[in-house]
Image (cartoon, rainbow, N blue to C red; front, top):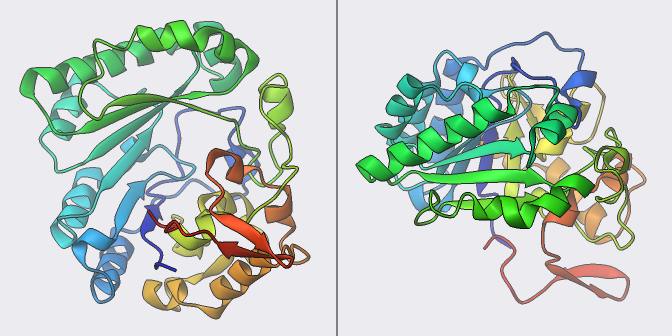
Length: 316
């Protein structure tokens, strides 16, 4: 089994939207930013354990990364420390102004994922609680045209969430982007997840996405992802951000008490992995309710009641 290869930094808990399908609405924390020194320390610790091509990074979480005051310093620091890693930013696209696009284009950033999530203004308003659908679409178009004009290597992904309305409109809507998406750019359609059971994905998707998993296999995230929040708490996956205020096993520890490498190799994470392999969710009720695995392949087969890895490499 390969080691954890994806590190998610929640740069900020501040956000300019209040999306209906985001668990940020339930958090008790006051909006905060990740201490830049914590990011530097994590990267320094990881450097002792990983080579540059073994690891990838994402700026995401429950805030809008483009609001982080040290965004471009963070991009430069990650790519200087791990020059062959892939670095992704996930954004709602509202702040993609011409000047910010110009700065992103000349940065060493690898990938921008825009959570558009809707195929029309009405569905955008319902899901994102915003009437700025046309503005965000224009921002994405501006970004893609700029990329084409300067032949930037940055990859762009546009995410649409599964709802009854989106499912009807998606085939035609996807075509409108064909001339603007080049190279490795893409538009993706994802089932709506329930954030550990805290979001009513059935209601929000109008019955299009499932509210539970009938056949549950071990979650891909436990073998591939580690997520760090703005207060330096380290979690086993991004969905665990939802339970940051609770005494959950999904919290592996604190950066002020342990190094990120020690937490990646912790007995706590190994114990959670073993629980998933044995179908034992007695201490992980959040995982039992969560629908995150619906968006990932099943890398496992049952062998005498225990999940074992298929021949394919889970981390590939």
